[in-house]
Image (cartoon, rainbow, N blue to C red; front, side, top):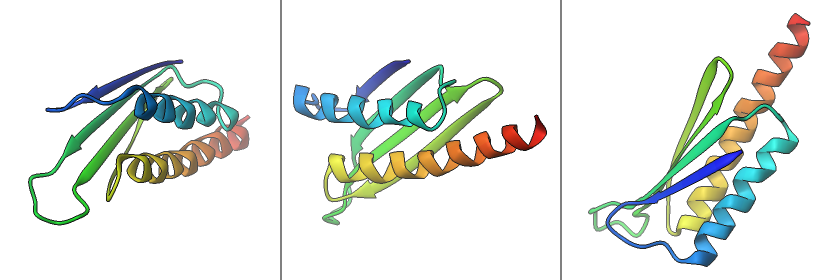
Length: 100
């Protein structure tokens, strides 16, 4: 699976990119037919302390799944977004098993 990480208006360090790749690759355990994923990292301009946003889009045959989370850190936002995607992937796999 190909993982593209886009950091908007800042440069993400290697440690953050490795963390994101690790979390995204764990989704393959639940559904092995994920074709690609894109991660967008950005900082909101609000004065709130929760201004780090992670948006993750994964592509599977026939469907795209998306999750967006806003937290104190990019790691926390990525973790919560991948958990939301994990639930979506498990739901999709369950529906596929019911059909077959």
